[in-house]
Image 1 (cartoon, rainbow, N blue to C red):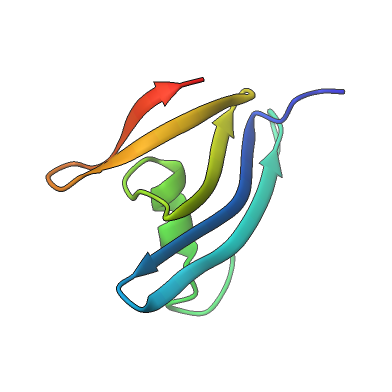
Image 2 (cartoon, rainbow, N blue to C red):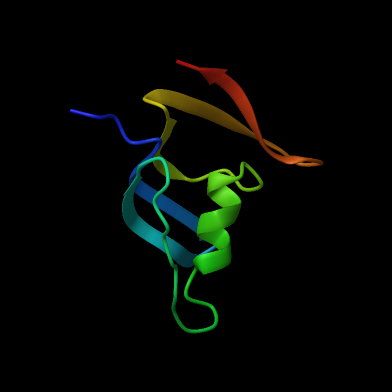
Length: 85
């Protein structure tokens, strides 16, 4: 079995009481082309910001090449990777 390059499981992100991402799952393998579509305010940019470590998810996990990216929130710089396990 080939590990996905990017694996997202049960990703949640909210801003105050506004739940933007609710249980997102995604797997992408090398050379996959993925399209994210939806209405304005549906969470497309928030998902990409979580993947790019610009936002810290409230719940869930992001793995790159099978390694878990542990994050913490930095008020000045957004999400900061703490460790890769």
